[in-house]
Length: 91
Image: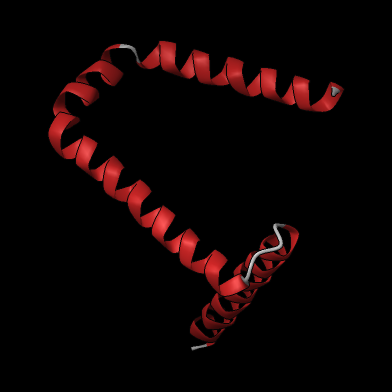
């Protein structure tokens, strides 16, 4: 019972964090917070719909490609991450 209560409290805190972040970001962008949240929801919905459509139509081919070049993808991702950290640190 205590773990359920703790989980619920953590969810409430994380929801408040998201709301505070959204409000702060909307304030920085000088936007109405409700318009910002609406645009965020529409944008995320379109993003996940497009990713889902690509996976439905090209899923097996993409998975075969990723499986074949998995090590190259990992290496490229690590190099990009290291380069981004270096650029961010020395800018």
